[in-house]
Length: 396
Ligand code: FEO
Image 1 (cartoon, rainbow, N blue to C red):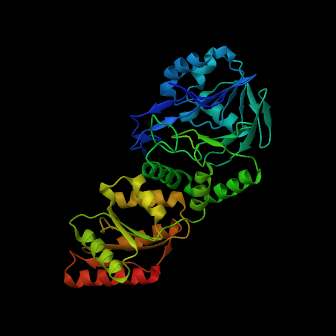
Image 2: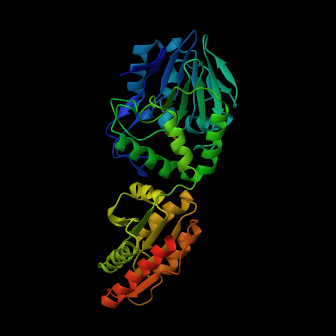
Image 3: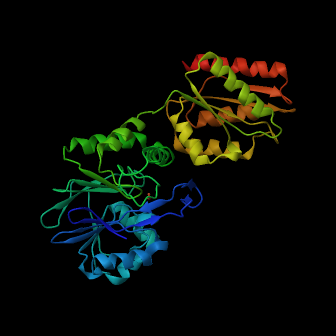
């Protein structure tokens, strides 16, 4: 499968309907994904990126239906991660001398991955490549999300090949933003941002200002995953600008794990207390051991405050709670409040441990947390409701 994006620009990628895990087992992809290389046929023919290595043969077969491989004049490697560079070894075995345009960091990454001395041509922001009637302008996007990341802009057709930025893990045969279910698209776009780009938000903000500052028209944004933005393409740029600036909604998310339902009862009583004070706050509860961690991260991303609960076990916390705390620490959320809770039998270290990890993860602690001994009775439940009320008041 391939299709025309605009004039002599073609999508030559792979829709991966069966993908359910990405980055090894780290990222859930409930709706699959796609890998989006593009072919530009001008006086010179250019291939932008490839696909994940497991689809190399399919990719080469499809590409050959569009163009004989030896007619490809240039390859652009906007990003060296395997989902976009994985088919390079197979492709380069057919056309070994074809120049690969990429950043200096991409040379290091590509050599590190494939141990080949291909014909690398290093480019920087503002460098151009003449194709004939049009040219490609390169824009480095360091740490968005790897040191090697880059975007390419095609003049006259006004297409931004943004690589991972503005992408979504979203398989669809429809391939355009205006044709797919908007709620599904939004969900996958925000999940992608929350789980992958959150730590780099300051750089996202700066890069968006830089790209908009170029004052070049953008008619289409072609990301390397998911659907192409052709209807009001700047909507996703504006959305990224919002997400990159300490984004939150009027939401408190309660994340907990529980052994014998004590910490669950605490979570529910805290939620009741919040709602009794302010019904406009969206309160969501998740048992972290029974929830998809990437979906949880998306909920955390949307929250102004989170409450994290675990009972004490072996002077520590339950492993699913520890895992989500570690995930959140790495994502470096900004400007979000947090507090801990949990029940215990005898030693009761969990809330201190959770509080410490939240603080380490950059959350602003609202208080010292609440702990209740054994399984919460009426008095303990009342304490938790009061705790929820205090959280709601602090939240305002
Ligand atoms: Fe889609 Fe960073 O690779």
